[in-house]
Each structure stands twice: as structure tokens, then as C-alpha cells.
Image (tube, rainbow, N blue to C red; front, top):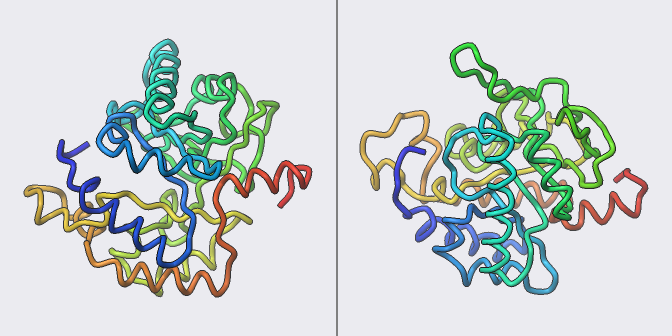
Amino acid sequence: MFVGGKAGLEEGLPRLADLFRRLDIDPDYFFTLDAAQQVPDFLREQTLDGRWFGSHGVRHVPAHYSLESPSWQERMIDDATAGLAGLAGAKPRLFRAPNFSVSPVILQALDALGYEADSSVLPGRLKRRHFLRVVDHRGAPREPYHPNARDVRKVGSLRLWEVPVTENPHSPGGPIGLGFVHALGTERALHAVRDSSGSVISILCHTWEAIDLARVYSGLPAWLTTTCNRNLEPFRKFLVSLQSEYEFGSLREVVGNLSTGGGRL
């Protein structure tokens, strides 16, 4: 949303992927179509051995998909799905909306196309543009659920699963992830995980958080650049500590457990 460069993909993605391999963590990758076109070989790797990958839309703009017309949202889902499937040789099974801006229209389109799970709802998140609420996930469940076709925050009868993003109790309305570790340190991030709600805890990473963004691009706001650093050692320590307390798993495993467990983990 701030720059048009690709340094995050070129430098941050290999750095993160190498860290996950060394720690034997199987992450879920979500690709915008324009990003996937830059790393098609990496995208195809995510389909090996039946692994799932996710769509993140066509581009990261406009900032809030949910504000666009229903026809635009449906077309975006179709275009992203077809484009990613063409590059990967397999269909995306997961979805996350940019800036968590999911809508009932998007969920219905995903359900119709056979997606297995969405992970866009961030309970507690409220974002306003002037007097308009662009994202409002207050009151949403913190456990996985089948969403309502008319309200993403409510339980309903859609087939796909909503696996909510974990709300950061130390930064209400925000996620727990790499940027938080960079900004506030390993111990603070570990406390956030331990204090969080829900049986599934998501750790959110962006590729541009794994580079020195301020050095590559000038004039960016401080709140953004303090969350971005090429030094992943604090994040490695964070993940290693979590491995001693929690079981890591992909969303494919989560959905499989939900399906065989009658909706319970």
C-alpha cells in the first residue's frame, strides 16, 4: 500500500522460508496474484504432497475489498482463483482478505468455489474511515466456526470454515506476529500468545517484515518501519519457545481435525 517494490518477495520470503524449514514448521502461505506471478516456482512448491496454499486476492489494493461492489468482489475472487490455479497447477484452498476486509459476498463466493477455509476475521478489530466502519469484527467467535452467509461475525451454515485470526491481547484489534516481535521483543510476544484466547493461535508474517524496510524505501511512517527488520533471530527464539509449549500445525491439519472431530479440536 505504501511502495511498489518487490524487496519483500526477493529478500524476505527466502529468509522466512529458510527459517521455517530449519525449525521444521509447515506454514500456510497466502499469495496475491501479482505476488505469485513473481515467485511461481515457490508457489508450485506449496502444492507438493497435497499441501494447501491460500489466495490473498488479486492485489493488495484497493485496501478494503469489502467496500467494493458485490460484482467487483465476486470477479476478484474468480480472477484470483483462476490465476493462482493456473500458476500452481492446483486450486487455492484457503483465503485471507487484505487488511482482514472480508465480506459476506466474499465468503459466499469462496464457499461456491470449494474453498476449505477462510482466515480473515480478526475478533475485536474495528477500523473506521471517516465515519464509515470499514472492518468491524467485534463479537466474532474466537474458535473456528462455519460462518453465516449474511454476517461474517456470526455462526451459520456455509460449508467452509472460518478460522479466526488470533487477536493480540496486548494490542487489541491487532494480530500476533513477526511485526509485533520486531517492535516489542520476544518476551512480550510470548506473553501475548499465552494471554490470548482460542484453541488455534495464528502467528502472522508478511515478507516485507523480514527486510530492513526503512533502508530500502525512504519516507515511510515509523509505526511501519519499526515492525520490519532483516534480523530474524528474535523471531526464531520466539518460535522455538512456542514449540516447547504448543503443537504447530497447518490450516489443512486444523480443518482435518475439525472435520473428524465434529467441529471440535
